[in-house]
Image (cartoon, rainbow, N blue to C red; front, side, top):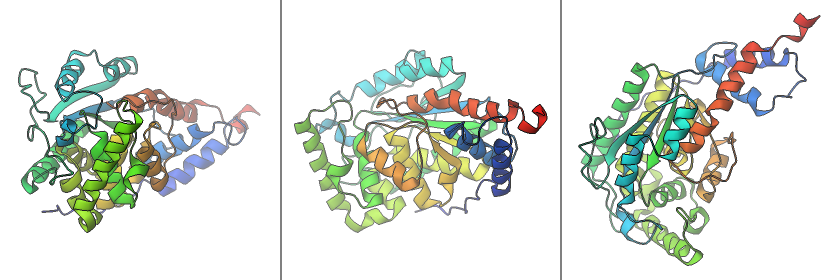
Length: 344
């Protein structure tokens, strides 16, 4: 049953106005800081503080899960890579682990739906829902009970990170085949056709990409009008890890904690979060632009301009973590730059 979701209040409009005036008064030409100005205004409005504080406690959570479609030719890599990568995150040797260490971002990895036993990894399986979703083109990816549990898990995870002092949250992903449910969620939510949202994922050739698009088209036809309901959309086309991320994003927004989105997966999750709890997206900014077409289409719909555009398509939260120094820079330049009036 769809949970009752309280309205999401907007970040402070009055503080945003104050921050814009403050930036206009700096000893810099008007608009010369470009997107850093917009980021500073957004942070100020989220913090209700002008000038904004550079977020020190940035926390990234990789939510991992396997997907029923992973055995249907939608990925260039086998399903077993998901579990192997969770171990790499836990050991600190994955790409996002290196970036997180470089940029002083606290990184946590959680097995939400990996089709493997990872109980030997301390703390990784404490929120496990199941061992993989069902193939979404044949049947609903989640049962109602699995979706309800994943929703509760996401709320709990966000509350844990907020209690740990999170000033900025990033929700990363890991799951072979996960660009397929993400693209399907965006297609159903935005009313797009399968071919428009289907990219190469982990590196498919054009023939395999077309097969993947046909699978997504089959899933969309199966779900039909149910896809207009965001909670039903999650059950039919999503996964436990994605549902948990949607719940966590809404929980963060309701608590006034900003979220930096990553690539296709987190943007797909954000589109569902915004449909379920309008106003959530005002607490989000896009860390980077993925090469996946569905992500760009969703960013345009959400009105988000990505901070970075580096041709990345790794996932893991890596693009958002790479953007963290620029978010901090935006706040630092807003708070540390002299006012033109003070220079005489």
